[in-house]
Image 1 (cartoon, rainbow, N blue to C red):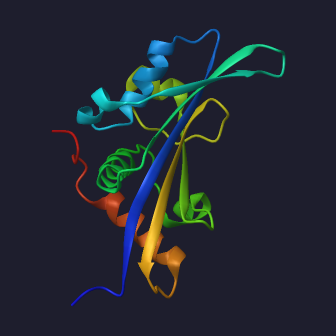
Image 2 (cartoon, rainbow, N blue to C red):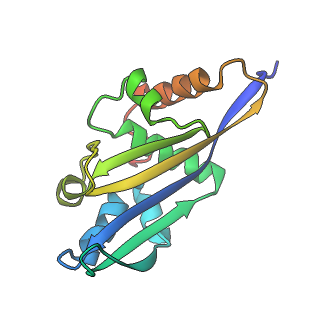
Amino acid sequence: MLAPFQIIVSKIQFEVTQHNTEDKEKIVNGFKHLLPESYNKILNLKSDELVGYHKNKILRHYFEISNKSQALEVASFILKNISDSMPKESIKKRLASNSELSIRMNKQVLINSSIFVLDNSSDIYKIKIKFVLHGKPVNKEELIISYITELISSHKNIGQE
């Protein structure tokens, strides 16, 4: 019997800003820490040049994974490796009405140690995980929160082979 609905990770978007004093190679390595090792070779990084408040040059680096099976694998890898606990209330605060989970990772900790630490400052890697529901669920938000909780609590070593 098929479930009345299905949750799919449809895409993941990644973004970080680089200031003149930061090394681009370290920024790229931070992105690589966010991905299972097999994905590091296919990292398709794009960059835009921005102008900061004090007219300084800032680079915005970003990429997206829109293949659904790859997006699920990467989302699972990220969620399972977050060093902070992510209780349901935290997930609820990070989940937008468009079913997009926003995660902000501490840039310096990630670059220097590959540890995933949630952060609310401005010096972060931004990650947006977009969920799509197919079918007619009763409570979309609660279903997505339960799904994320399951991804976090399942075994921690997925994608680290």
